Length: 324
Image (cartoon, rainbow, N blue to C red):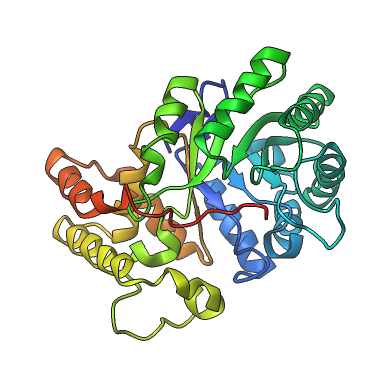
């Protein structure tokens, strides 16, 4: 396994991380535990979850699975998206963050989180309130590093400016949709992160499975796929996305790789990317993703991948999650 600093911090994270959105939803506790054990056995140390994944089941499952192994893991979770009907059950106010962190710690069966991330920008709470709260949580020892998610470049820069002005802890990372099917971060976010030493953690690195080659134009939905279990995902199955998936699959076949591994390898080598989180619902998927670490993309293959995905630099983002 290769390890990389998370942004400009001293924290080392595996180049391939484990995303757990499917735990408790498309993967039961036994399967999820098996995947976590398999990941740890292969050197993956970065596990990412959130307070709302599978109605909080993801955190609970991870807490059970990491019993006796917590010290081997860089554990990341999030708060900020809607988690209830009440007026204070969303956003990044001090009230909500303190409440959600305590709940996450109980489910995760730990007394600290390595990386605590604000799930999305909150336009209704002053950034200074959010950052002061996060700084206090770091001082308390319950949080070791802080990160953002779904922030626009200007929002991250504003947060970094406030942290510098007030002497608060600063964001060391940001999560964003980033893949061959979504290169919009390259316009503003990547240059900002390179300049400010913020690590990028891409989510949807395989565009929800489109870059695995499982979907094709005119074919039926594969059994057990995200599109079958989550009908809302079908909005992503647009012709230009499916065409890209077929082109990546062809390039992968020509060079003896799986399309998943090739797509992940391309992303791992992009500027400012610290770790790439990818989910799995069975250990075989994880094994295929691990092959990305062995792929060296030469100039010819890199140029071909850039060429087929260039149109996605100026397209709309594949996904983003914001508060209304």
